[in-house]
Image 1 (cartoon, rainbow, N blue to C red):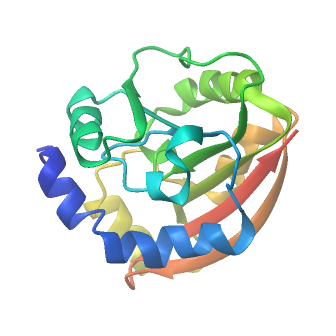
Image 2 (image 1 turned 60 degrees about the horizontal axis):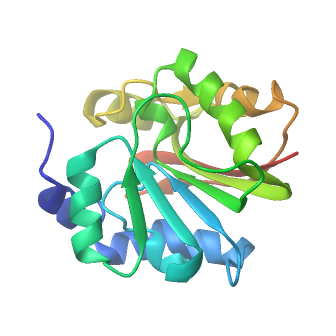
Length: 192
């Protein structure tokens, strides 16, 4: 069962949780001032406040979540998209945010998206990724995530990084941490 956008935003992406585990981590390493940011898998728009409305573009295949985001954050730009092609020009973004999205996408589709990220990212741009991740010495958390997360494709660290390194991105792990006791999170960046 999929949660309505309002319930999802309130339960899964409440402001306090988003601030602690996502925004604080990102703000430690990145400054999006006057930088064009593509939020891939923007959902209900919880991360748009990291950016200025003039420089933010949130996309998601779920049109219901995008419509909710447009109502909630009406000064920001959001768009629903379908297929593998991103609705953006070549070399148009300084940053691409990928926050808890990849584990919902079949691995064979991710390869095509990574090529699209490469196309729309400026030559000196960066991809910022934060994903649930299976950790080697964390069987309880791994079991919990596998049993309770709606994403069917949670990967281990090496698999996430391989999506990018195979397209000649250089990856840097910024942090590995636990979220809410049971979620292993991998936070990394990828550059060309």
